[in-house]
Length: 500
Image (tube, rainbow, N blue to C red; front, top):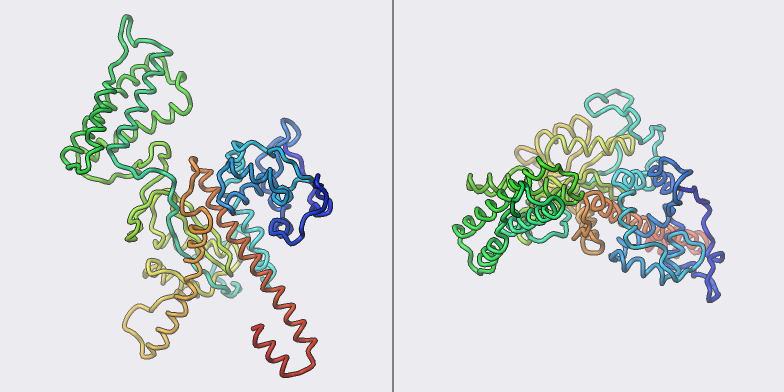
């Protein structure tokens, strides 16, 4: 059950403090509370509740969204976040409480539910609704920036097309997940342990497979001893590693054979949900490892590098510090300082491919109602097909032209340097997200919660940019008021130069 809250903001003087006084109106959480349009968040959040009249009353969207915002802003754990909120009246005001309470507002485990409810699609809707208002107001021809039957780039070439406007800056990066560096031998050892646990559960619930039968032999002590004997060596030869992997895979295959007999006899309803999921993961993992071992290769399609998070794939970056990372790959676009996520994928993909590039351009059109005037991108985006698409749509793609250099080469170099400087804005977004927020290591254990964390970090970046823009605008207005009040013409010009 979800009750629609009162959208009116609680005044800081109405927030009840047991020790008297009132909140400081210049506090960052008070200012942030007033800057966010909570009505948009409520309208999106209540879509999770089909029946709004029965069941327990769910916590409001302000508590759910506000708590996750604080967590990503301050890089807190779930338990530390709840403790911080229970100790800080400004944080309680930010999440919509009416009075200061010393007890916990909710259990830390409820944060997982909040992340599941605020899906990637909902976070995208919230971000686009809040941060695309300025572009909608600037649209002179009244073209709505929504999808609503918007024609594609190849079909939309009439003379009444809106003029290209704006600059689109695009790039992609990997967001590492919190997993141990995967090695085939360690993964085999863990998969073997999982099969042994499932066999123990079947034996406890069902007994022997045949009458007067004994418990299936797993040779777990021998397998564990052999694994440690190889894994603890400082120098491991390829021959020894392959020999031990073969032995561990044989143990896994034997255990899976016993489990298959139990399944034929008693079914899979006996297993817990987590055990059933682990069993499917181990079956796929065993096939992949067996294929790589027999064919003497080190890669396979959809390779599992984490048994607990089997959707994670290796992402080859080519950087000297981390040539390969394990996590989600995201493509973002920066428009007027605001960041939007174009794609989140746990599978490796080439962001410079024609279809990927075209999808980013089309997404810009869906958001704003017109194509960009310029696209600032890295070398990987400057393929012939992508250049042809930009030429067809009247978009200027950054970088040197194909073919021999022109006569005015110095001007072209200066233009390239200017565009490179502008393109660094997207690198700064990744830098702030990874150094200041939590994009350098996503601690979530579920696919949907990891996507929520990524989107929430991007939302925090956008809110910080919005706050800086407001501060600069207020400063400019104050300086212009001073400019108007000055009677001396020379002082006016000096103040104008300083302001600009």
